[in-house]
Image 1 (cartoon, rainbow, N blue to C red):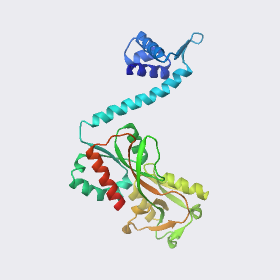
Image 2 (tube, rainbow, N blue to C red; image 1 turned 90 degrees about the vertical axis):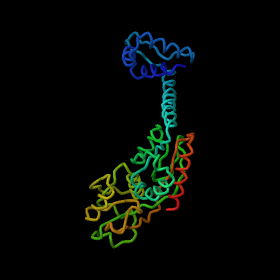
Image 3 (cartoon, rainbow, N blue to C red; image 1 turned 180 degrees about the vertical axis):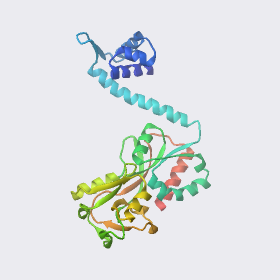
Image 4 (cartoon, rainbow, N blue to C red; image 1 turned 135 degrees about the vertical axis):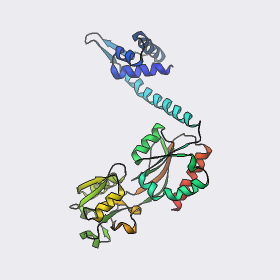
Length: 295
């Protein structure tokens, strides 16, 4: 089966117009027609019909099913190109979320540097959701990911390295600062400083709100953890945040959440299912796993 035939057919499904497909690929319209005929012969079924009454191209049910499967094939071909291209160098393509980078990676970096692995590592820093998409697409090969629950995807092999609790932080001036623990139900009328979608915090916040059946006001959202902590310190609102990012000199009070909500900040190392790691990548993963579990 010709991969170009697949591209032409998928474009025809999208545009439902032979002329547009031929213009897109710079080929003649008969070439597109012959590609479709080859596929129909291969699968022994009609993939395309011409509606003469309305003068339009109609994709049959069999054609739509084939298009769905071709999407997976094209993804696999693109992934194969990226993976094979990466074998030409010793570069470790690694994804790192900002919180995990701040909390854990400095301790990992020392051992990676001494072993010579850090010099081979190309680090992409982004939110866990984007890194998961990049991992599936083959733009990176290894990632440390944060999630509110353990990761379970067919395309991803993930090892959970541990989890940390979320906490409420408040200014020492805030009326909640007198408390050491609190039920989320008590926070319905409070103003929140929120972290944006680069982090897993919005999902955790939603889970707690749904559990407590409350809808607190979010007065400000930011992608900067330091800025969020500063706003809380100035008593402009409270925040839900991973406890480990709070330092003594941040000037905020941590308040334990007592609700039994199955939401924590999980840290996992992940690769694509079926991906064959190189020796350097295997060593890199082992160092990362050992150092994060230790800390």
